[in-house]
Length: 158
Image (cartoon, rainbow, N blue to C red; front, side, top):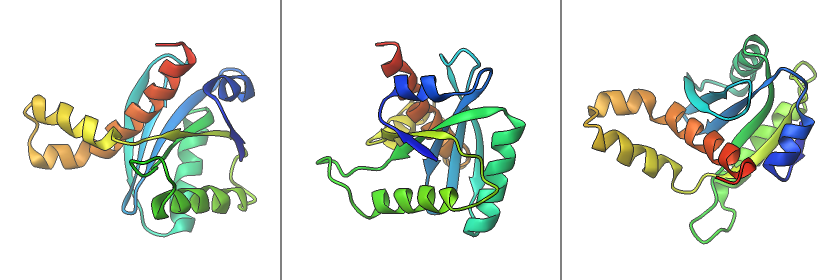
């Protein structure tokens, strides 16, 4: 894994004809979103129920390969005051563990501030009168799309 500092660096580090993946790392799920091939639109893709690190990493690697993903935008769960807490450490440890796997693709990764992403998505789902069960099914992948779209919008100055 190559950690990059800006969306522009992420785009420059991509292999040709690859897509971006947004990742919302939770303790129970991995919310995943995919960007289009022009790197302009993020779409919710899948919610992976977490088990153990090995199977989670293998499932993520398969999705990355199947969907021709060349880079990731991983949500960085900073505290509201901007400080790093235990969730940031867990995210960094997850990335470090992926880096240590011999068979995991070495992709560029942008860590993106995800403060209030889940709250924003939850509010949108409530406004759409989405049932509690449906919200639980889609919130993580929608949060991943929100994170990815934020990085994409920053790239284009939106």
